[in-house]
Image (cartoon, rainbow, N blue to C red; front, side, top):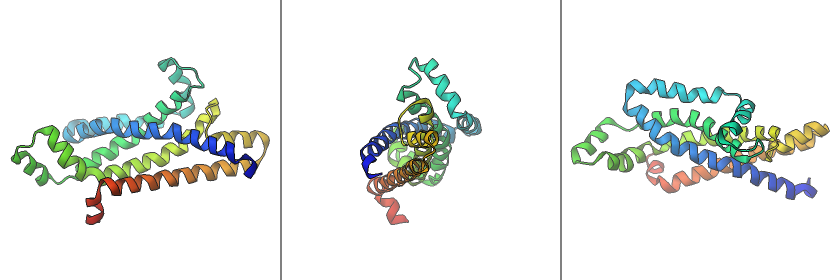
Length: 209
């Protein structure tokens, strides 16, 4: 395995490069969608259900359809990033709706009474208070994305999943185990980074906890 450390590192970096844009994009897209669904209750179930249905789309089918929609080649990493963004959105929208639901109503009303415009109230009052729940949601999305990115190896997009497919084709269990351990390790490291980022950006949450 030591002789192949360089290639394993390259695949791990490729895996990470496919994952983080999708995690970030799903979080940023879910914020306005989740806030809207929370703010307008009649739309809540419709939005949550419709976005949740994205998660049941078979990944291989999505990888085949996306090149037709995006105008990319089937081997383009963009297909994997967009697919992972859609799956992440399915999870993060519900988490965002629930996160904004944790903001106490009296705090929101106090901000309105103080004269905060809507954009300022959302950015400086609701978003910080919803932060811990939002972080919990993105951690779930992160773990899910790291796992699902491996499927892209089936269409030729390099990642740690490549070790799975090559190990299976060669009947070489060690290669599969290395891919599995690498994927889990990458998920743990990214989760730890998110926790650290949360502590840096939301010190009040740690004090409350």
